[in-house]
Image (cartoon, rainbow, N blue to C red):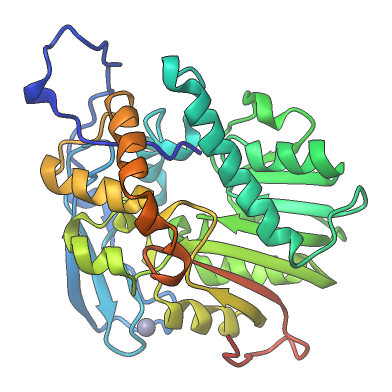
Length: 349
Ligand SMILES: [Zn+2]
């Protein structure tokens, strides 16, 4: 996944200086492309408006509404685009699906950032499970597959990836069993996994409780499920509100606070072993992108122009970022296992 970004600064740049890739023109979504959503957690329909967002990342037209459930407090997008229309928003501009690897003289920095992200993910899972050639790993929402490629090349683990977009041409997915489609529609038969990972998958899902239950049933008895999602009750949300990068409209269907994530896991029959107020994903990206989104006001971020200011800003903020794990800036990670009873569990994080 690419973690670089900045302001487009279109007005301050000479038009001929940087070649900008053409973006496909997408018309604004029509009202009939949306559907109302009942609360994913409690099924309720009594909500209060939370925030209206734009597609700040790519600048596609449209306004998208998030609400809060009055009964259980879950925040989610409603109405949301029907499933058949959301694919258009996961195009080549979509950050996790970009396969670009050449960033000119910044390529080594970019590669180091990518590698650091995968190493951080592996460190997290390595603290919770032995990574060996027999280890069966399933990455849900695997994107271009660099995490799985690293697990396979370093530990020889048997790796499977699922993504709803066909990314089988990605070089990282060579040697990976790749499945294209909705996670909970995959047929795995009797297969069980020692480790299932969801790195920024759940907040995109059209039925998160169903995916969690499906994952629980696919876990080996001592298996672990590791989930990383943006955390709604965090500092960058309070800073940026309608321009918070964690909204990522229209792709993000749910906005999970710590409490609503733990509620959802318990409801799915998963027992929480560990909850952390940070993730592998660099929270600096949210600090940077939120500031850029405030400036751009929905015009979209040009990653080619963003990458240099991104890295410069990171150097400037490095003293502050030393404490990122204590500051609850943007992310949360949870490690869980199947509840012994298989039924509703407790909050022990
Ligand atoms: Zn609810």
